[in-house]
Amino acid sequence: MVRLRFAPSPTGYLHVGGLRTALFSYLFAKQQGGAFIFRLEDTDQQRLVEGSEDNLLEMMHWAGLQMDEGPGIGGEFGPYRQSERLPIYHQYSQQLLDAGHAYHCFCTPEILEEMRNAQKAKGEAPRYDGRCRHLAADEVQQKLSGKAGHVIRMKIPENETVLMSDLIRGTVAIETSQLDDQVLIKADGFPTYHLAVVVDDHLMEISHVVRGEEWLPSFPKHVLLFRYFNWEAPKFAHLPLILNPDRSKLSKRQGDVAVEDYRQQGYLPQALVNFIALLGWNTSDDQEIFSMEELIEKFSFDRIGKSGAVFDREKLNWMNQQYLKDLNSGDLFELLAPYIAETPYRDEENSQLRKVSEVVQSRLTTLADIKSKLALFFEDKPTLNDAHLIEVLHEESSRIVLNEFKQQAGKAEEMTVESFLALMKSVQKATGIKGKNLWMPMRFAITLEEHGPELPQVAAIFGKEKCLRMIDQALES
Ligand code: GLU
Image (cartoon, protein in one colour):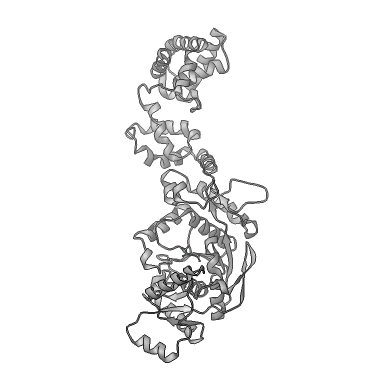
């Protein structure tokens, strides 16, 4: 059975790169009728951040990635928090010690520091020199019974080429001379990521491992550990890096990296998921908009590229707009409510707020954009202060249109979409002005924007009095 896991460390928030790893794992698991597992890799006690587990799970839920097994969900292969599996790692590190694939190392941090400095001084890359590899058995026993702290390291074979097979990169080779005798059990008794990930991927019967390219340097160590244990390794896919537009590695400094930030700014989960699916993956026909069902159906490892994928915020914005436009008015209003609640207009009548939401729907890039759209509708006389608009409104033909409209509207009954359109027609007739010269001044005077929401709809929401006030303002400008 196909089984994939998402295995984040609880060191803060869910990174967009983490969401992509989770998403691809989820898509393949679902496509193959397999299981999607959440495993918390919390063995680095120094880097734990309070509340991260909850945040990770909440973001997975928000993104619509339903987990089949995990902490709080259960499953046959638990516990799913590595900190609750310590005896398991000790059992397996003992197995490696017994087989001669690992050894106790008693080097203190001071000794290691000295070693590093000496290597650096000689222009060598710092690495553990293996001095505890050859301690005699009785010496090891003696040190273990004393107070000396120790770690357990894996033995990297000498002069060997390790071959690693990756679903995206094919076969990659590395010389063992490049590898360090990796620590497997730390002085605090916790395993390192390297031991825990291999043991758990095996015991949890993981069939495919999807993770970021930053784990490639660790991959040979994992391949060796699988071999030492005599276990069949899962298949691996290392995803290309996610880059800033300047092709540097995606970083907090250049924009948001936490999924949480995108949620807060009012990106829809469907849009973010769709966007993230295309970071490194595509279909041959350049399709851009995918539902989750389509992603599940079409996903394949063959169509993931090796080169970095640029996180293009403009494209995300465009995508979010597409998803926002598709919402029915009930869903839209419900999603906008928390953002409206942050404005001074929160107590306006619901029916009005709802109408306004519909009128500006196609102008929203994010849900949060609603906050800047309300003043126009709920202030008695929103102020016109855009120099370009004022310039156009000063033109002779603009003044003719506005004056004519003012006169005719004064005689009209109520303002509706239909009556507004009829008025515009008769202004056209009376003035002989049409097209852009007719519509632009009206649009500028009433919506105060060059590319605002639909003019007749706005006029209808304003009603006659407010439309006239806006026209007066334009004429006085
Ligand atoms: N715990 C690792 C992380 O935080 C998981 C790496 C892997 O999937 O093997 O990303």
